[in-house]
Image: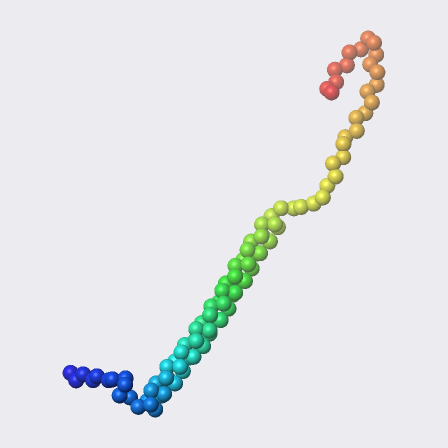
Length: 95
């Protein structure tokens, strides 16, 4: 199996400039791929969060519809005045 040894110092100036431009292009391309991945992840996370919010909202609406809510006022019951009992009669009334 043939082995090739390359010495960086033996490369010409034009070859070193071409490799530098290629390396810079790869770094810039990698940056844009990373930026696109971050944006796609943020969009996906937003979709998941909106979906969870929507499901939570639907569950809360379903739970709220189980109970009837209304306003009411407590009215105290009036007590009727008791007529005086006759002296000879005994009346057993619950009080």
